[in-house]
Image (cartoon, rainbow, N blue to C red; front, side):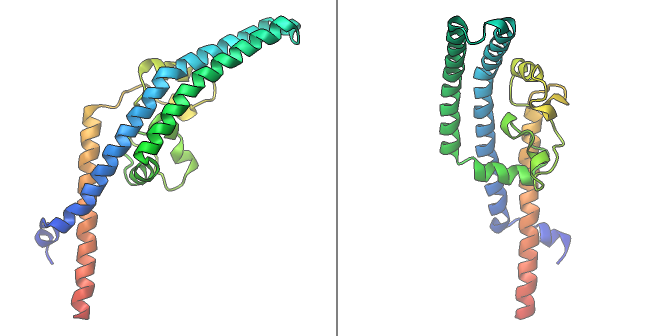
Length: 200
């Protein structure tokens, strides 16, 4: 079998690329939706936490007093309310898109796909996830600056300058996954036909 026949288009070679593209679309829609939640609440949460910390430090001598305890309760309630809506939205998105299967599959085979905030450190934690080649972000510049102000949180993200995910990056990933899927399909078909030919 020559290279021309190996690469010759046939419908079987387009099944895997189609699956990869569908998984990519589902993953990207989830990445954008989940990071939009970070855009909506993260800076507010950091601001509340900073106010809480400053108040506790400035009024350390009043710890245990009625006024101090009431103020702490107000801060706690504000943080709780600020967490509830994002948590509900995240749960709805993850449940609706069955994000785990497509997202983990795609980021395991595509090192060029930028990761969302909640998966940014995945290559450090999970050996099957390759290091990212492209470090663009789905969150806004404002949210990135808020994240950068947190010492030790999202450390991997803070190592790179802010760049938002570009159209070029998205198009490149669509093409990369299509070609990767096509070549994998060609190899599988080549091996299958070789084995069938020997048996025949």
